[in-house]
Length: 460
Image (tube, rainbow, N blue to C red; front, side):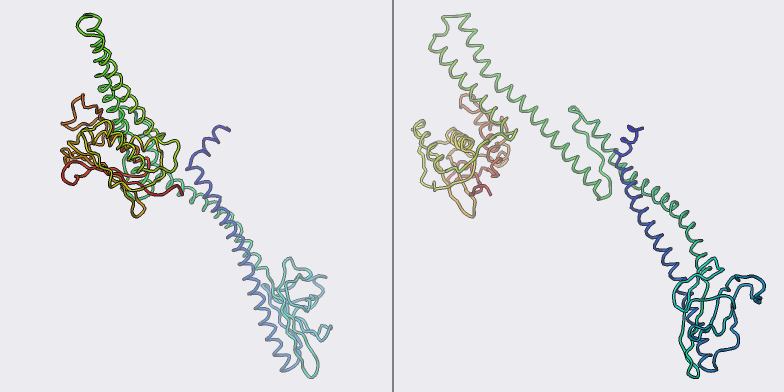
């Protein structure tokens, strides 16, 4: 039983219905009590008004002609009173009396004493209460008090009849409200259950499946849109991962194959290759393999959000000038221009940004004919860094694709140029992790200009 209750209360439909019923029950109970009290007060007020009107009428008669000899009583039976009938007579529905001081002058029902004060009172011999009204008047110098008592029996009976109606009607209303809420919530949650079943059926091999989107533009529709967008991201991530593994395997196969073939030739034909050539081949391919593995690891860390474990102030102009000096040493055939490098500082991960500058420099050096130009500037809270070459440039249709992994343009597909197709992909990943953007555009005078824009401020 406990497990069944836990499962039931775990249902949103059950909890929402129970919660709504509790609220409705409290409101109905409060409304029922208020209705009973208001009905009782209204009926009692009506009886008091009747008593006051009767007292005012009798008071007018006393003022005009003095106390009458008799007062007419009002009862359902309209019976004559006989003092010998019973010792404690039952009061009529309306009892009228006139007092002169404390002395009873005349009464519509002798034997029945009505207190000479306003309010709700009980009369001897009655099984219900009366509403009493009094009016003071005088006649020929004598003060009189007119007292009228009106029975509250009808009012009490009306209130008593209302209670069972409310006692029966309240649960019926709760039953109807509960049923309506149960059906409405069930219909509202039905699309969610369908989406749950559809998502439960999605696997790594069926990420192309999507949940149905309801026609309504409500929260369920937005949930379906969000889940489909999530599935789009998962499918895209899986496809990228598969392409990454495939491309990485392809890239790793080349140096490994070269090393294996060189080793097999040296072992089978010892005289066909000398030791120096063998050592040069092994070292070159090992360095190429090491660079590729390092770049793959860097991309993996970037995908996992671990590209920049520590951040601080970084002077980008220092990074540009240091890498320009390296390029000048390694490529004396190229003119290196740093005249447009101004002092710029950002908040970032220095080792990762060093990778960015190095990769852009290596890319520019591979494609430059005679010159590589650096620039750095700051305006409107943004830092703009550019590395330009005077090579063939990048066609418009390839300017987005060039930042994808393992992408080489036709002129850069030769393996001896040192490129792996990962350098620019690493640049984009690191720049994105710093909240910036990178693009390629035409350089002045021809060639390609790689531009990076980053925020020029520290952490908030």
